[in-house]
Length: 445
Image (cartoon, rainbow, N blue to C red; front, top):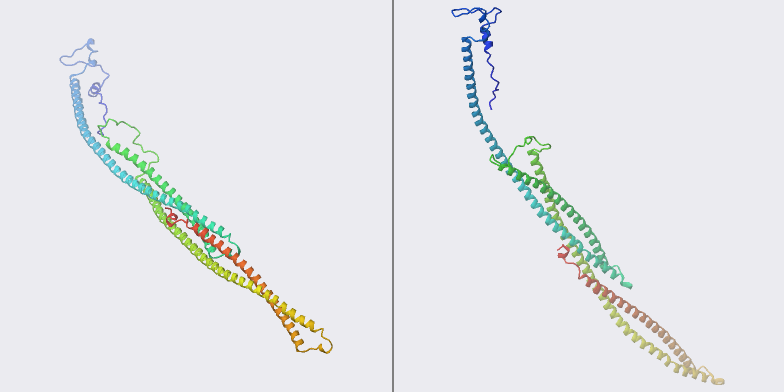
């Protein structure tokens, strides 16, 4: 529209113009000239009429007013046509630029929406992988219950050893080390499991933030796409008087981009942290599984060595027992022989003593200490000494037999203990340890 302000047309006052051209006088108008009239009868008609000049002037003013109105109307029509063309072009150009801006904004939203979608998918995949590692941790943690039960059962079984076999040997030391290792592994797996759970929670929070941002962009994209499809022929357009006002708490393009970049950066950090944690979880599971299997092998080697030592000791004791039994038999025969030898000395003793007794009844000078008497006395002394020697040897043989019997009982008891210990170590412990979990199961598969 033109900036010219239209005002109302001025009213043309012919009376004022006539008065300017013919000032009023207080004198009574006098009709002069050839056709002048005089008299009181015509005095009142002159003031109600215009002169010829006034009539022409009035017509001229009407002509001028009509010309001015016509010229002004033509000018206004020309300006209106020009203004309509200009505003139409400006409006179409502005609308085209707005549509272009909407298209650019749609491309921008689509780009960020695609970036958010890609990061959401990556974070979802990473979270699923971490969930798999969490499941492995739980299975690996559950698998440690079997080695703990086996080690505890082995220690309890070996507490039932008796006698000198109830010793704190290398097997017990390795079993105690195995229990300490299992407890350490369980604590490490629990801490790692807590880290995985917290990281999964962080991943899901970051994913939720990305999804909210993506949802906002999806809605904004649909709105801007709908706005971009509007045109002057659309049937669902209407006036919205207050739509041109800026809303409260409105954001700026820079802050919007920064907000989305921060969300993506936060999600990327959580995803990279999750990747590192997955590597750590895998390393922890592999290391703990190999440590447990190595300790299991150490316990098995100690058990096998202990069983060999126990079996060797049992074999030696059985050999000694055989020797003792042979010696007991021989000693029993020896005791019987000694007893018979002592009994065999009774008759010679009786003979010698009877001889001496009978010869003591000789009379007078015949009762002499001749060489016979001396020999008989010596014979009694020799027989007595022999009997005493045999008696001492007999007692020694009986004591030896008693000692060997005690030794036999001791060896038999020790052999029984060794058999019992071998049964515990070989049949109980080693058989039970065959159910020790494999590396695959200890790694959570």
